[in-house]
Figure (cartoon, rainbow, N blue to C red):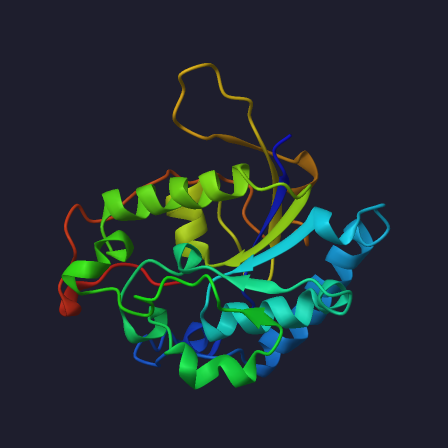
Amino acid sequence: MAPRIVLIRHAQALHNVNKEYDIHDPPLTELGVEQCALLRQSLHDRFASLPLKLDEVAIVASPMKRTLQTAQLSLDWLVDRGIKIVANADWQENSDKPCDTGSPISNISAEFPSVDFGSLDPIYPDKTSAEATRYAHTRSSILSRGQRGLADLYSRPEKIIFIVSHSGFLRLGVVGWWFSNADYRIFDFVARNEGEQQLNLTQDETTLAGGLGVSSTSPAMLGEDLPETSPSKKSLGQVV
């Protein structure tokens, strides 16, 4: 049976405050840390009492500082039980602006001891070379990455998987819903008919405004306004 997935947007990071997109791999702000406490309480209240074994729960996160910090602060009650946060480059943000480009793992691994970087694509954090086209800021690459990420989750044995990612990628590449900072939505996979390739999700009605009730109830469109070819540095699209 396919797992239930909990898609989480990172809490407020430095670049979110004044839209300073030139900050490289920005960490959380003080407000972001406070938001994580509220997120933690909501997730703990909703999931901690479920009779789940350790091998029935997983945590996946974008390898960027703000997502790893959010995962550590909001899911520490699972980390303390021995569940590792697994870094996965497929869940990183869309653009290749500095704020959406990660740090070399050798530079940050000591800061995140609860994160398993062992299966991370070795090309990370490259998003611009010819070898990194799977992470390019193009419509086809982002939609393909979304489906690839979902396919990976669909095939996993756990019953619940928490994924900490970014609003732009979640909205435009994965589910077509808006996410406020440090909010989450819960989804289940829709059973596929024979021969179907596309993976589809249905949202738990209790999170239609986000699990914290602070996200938009209006859906977005997958791939909307994403460029067909990678923009230049001077004309990169939306960053969130």
